[in-house]
Image 1: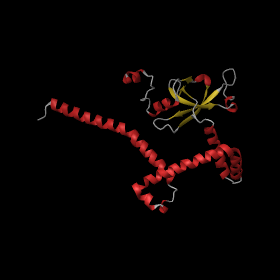
Image 2: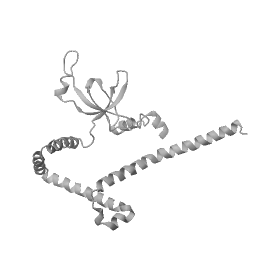
Image 3: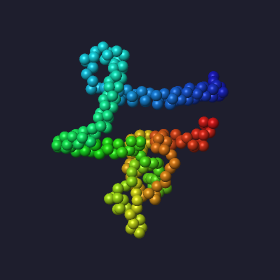
Image 4: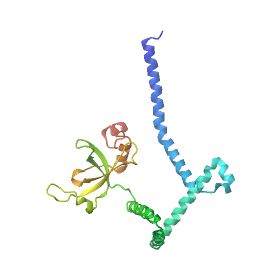
Length: 226
């Protein structure tokens, strides 16, 4: 016959085991996710290589060293292309642009991707300018948003105040939790946004964790560190 104290001790033991398992999962999850992502990208990058001609390397340690060698070669290839574009960039781009422009359908795909890569090239540090608060999805709620650019005049001139004057606007991206790769693109008047003094990486950590990961200067974070 079990006494109440014995039952409480068993429950405490099971709770302790459960908490330790959960802590172990939380600790190893980022490591396993990083390893899985790296292996996925490694396999994706090296899948084109004809391994049948290098049978010994492809079977040694399951071909992992060979994949790393191929990855290094791919990186070196992109480096050489980067050097070529540095010295012959204008002529090379004009030649390639003219080549793809002569191919129907393909030229539209090429021009779309090219405009996107040019936009990223002009924003090498981050595609996001700053972090702001906006009222979303209703006036009594707030959401963290990432400013991508100022809204073009051709659009913002249609957004006017009560006096009929155009309002300067910004383009913002609201990332979803826990997957920040999807979200909403919205246009907000500058007067309706609240700038936040945090960087983009901190904002993304808060979004991914649904607010559980706090900025480093938060009082709770400071208390835990001290």
